[in-house]
Image (cartoon, rainbow, N blue to C red):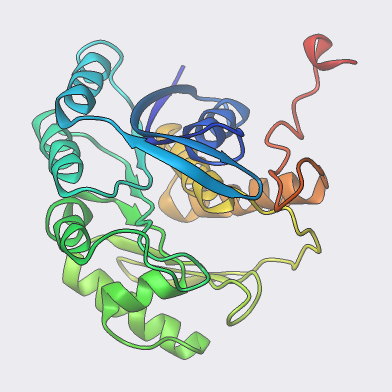
Length: 266
C-alpha cells in the first residue's frame, strides 16, 4: 500500500488540518501518517486557542515516521514558526523525501496574514525549493511572486515568477476573487488550466488542506503531477457536492462521500 505523510496542525472539529488530511488520504487509497505542528481548539466558527509543539518534538515525530514507514509523498500545511519550518526542511533533506506538496499557508483568503514576515522568509528560503508543487491561493501567490494578481493573465505571470524563483511547480488556486473554480498549474513545459464547476455550497472549511492532501495521495500512487491535480480537483468537487451540513459556521466537506461498504451503513 502506498503511504503519505501530513505535516500540519490539528483541527479539533475535524474539518481541516491533519484530520482532513488523514480522511482525504484514506479516501484516496493511501496509508496516512501525521506529524503534528500544533494543536488547535477550533470549530466551524473560528479558532479559539493554539498550542504549538516544540521543535524537538516535531523532530522526534518525523524521525519516527521516516525511519520506519517511509512515506511515498508528503504534504505540509500551516507552520507558523521559523524553528519548526527549519526542522521540517532539515528532515526532508536528510531522508531525501520525494513528492513534496507544500500548502504555503501564509495569507487567509480574507487577506489576513497568518504568519510573521520572518517565518515567511524562512518558508521561502528553506521549504519551497524542496517542493514538488506548492498550492497558494491568490493572496499567497501575490506574496510569493511580488505582483498583484487580479486576472487570469496575472495568475499566469505570477505562477511563472514563482516557478522560476523557487524551482518548483505551482498550482495557483483561482477562487472567487477571479474565476470561482479554475486553477492554474505552472510546471516544466509551461502551464495548464484545470477548469472547475462552481458548487453552491457555503461549507468549505478545509478545502485547501484537502486539495493538497489529495494531490499528495495521487503522487504517492505514482500519478503524474497533471493527473494528480486533475484527480484531486475531481475529489474536491465530489466532497463539496455531497452537501454535508454540520456546525454553525462554514462547515466541513464530506471526505468519505465515495466510501460505500458494510461498515459505513447506518
